[in-house]
Image (tube, rainbow, N blue to C red):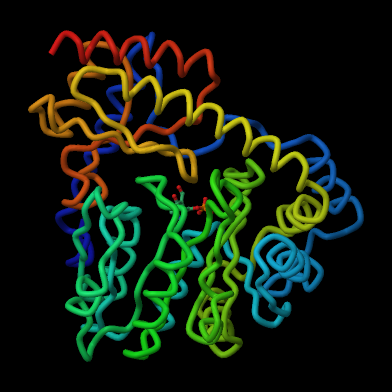
Length: 383
Ligand code: PLP
């Protein structure tokens, strides 16, 4: 069969190979999975069913029901001091779909998108699918995997169109400080760059508060804030995301989305509005549980031979440094999986700067995490 040129040579990703190998093992403890282990709360499911029974079973407005977009605005105002109106919001099929619509809306072939390593890998395939040139900024652990001013200045060219930010970050778990964000904001303003700020982990910040990039002075008009229900409300399977940004951009994203999905599942929309309006307390309880797990795992990792791990800052990821084992990230991950049945992800899956690190998702119970840490400790001692 004939495929489009860009898809002629696709290979299964390294990640897929790890997950497939892990699936075949009986006793595997999987710390690779980037989704909360909690099911969606039942009253959220009831809200979806109630909406169905009220007749919300027809095509929705393509941008999303106004009350749901309003719930998004209220949530961001309440939690992150971001002022927006429903006109500035579009609901998408997960944050991923929103990211794609945004790139499609803004990128001409040859335009440049700046990615900060280590990054969430789908940014690459989406950017490439839109014909963008990807400019990767390599970063260092000692700088919290954030770019310096000169790193950013050097990456900018007349073709730069978008800078993608992601705080709290997948895979490092790092949370950008307000000062660092202000530094980046000044550069965005100086060079007239648009920022796509992926804030899907906004509800999981363990020290201080999440700073929303668009809420920084002067940034709202040049920022698209991406969020969603997957992580904050344990609703990965419902596929609800949203983007908040300038009305003219939202309109173009809506135009593109209309021919792809014609809006978002009606029941998932209504359940999301209910969750956004009623679940702050439960969300905070879960955040505390994740923090407890992250602190526990970081402490255990720091006691392992040849492993160091930065403190938990945000999201549910730790990104320990395993360079002193003299194994590459890939070798470490495969040996740990095959020898000790613990699944993790090599740092290099997120760009070159992830070399010498592995990603651990604290998305398992304390009991599972403790067992996995025991196995990993023995594994590191045996190297
Ligand atoms: N952005 C980041 C940084 C993520 O880690 C993920 C999921 O892991 C997503 C976006 C996708 O989120 P969604 O489930 O809303 O599509």
